[in-house]
Length: 102
Image (cartoon, rainbow, N blue to C red; front, side, top):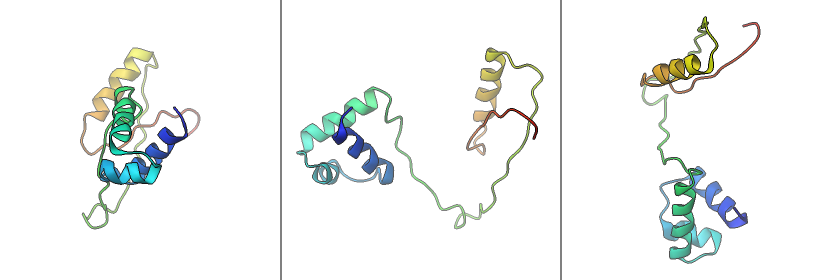
């Protein structure tokens, strides 16, 4: 990954709806090389997906809730299973594993 790739990532992270032409112009490439770089970044899993950020206030979702769940078993496979189960709930946006006193 070079400086141009990092610039592309910065641009798409700010606004993934930009056209390839607009991204290419911002990084000083023609469209085809820019598109190939983006395809490579996607193929390598660096760009995992493109999403839209919604305005929670306008949707009437102006509250963030953190819930503490204590698990009895800390085996890697059990924690993975727990994370998959919780992540399948549409209202769950993030999942954090924390240690220490809550």
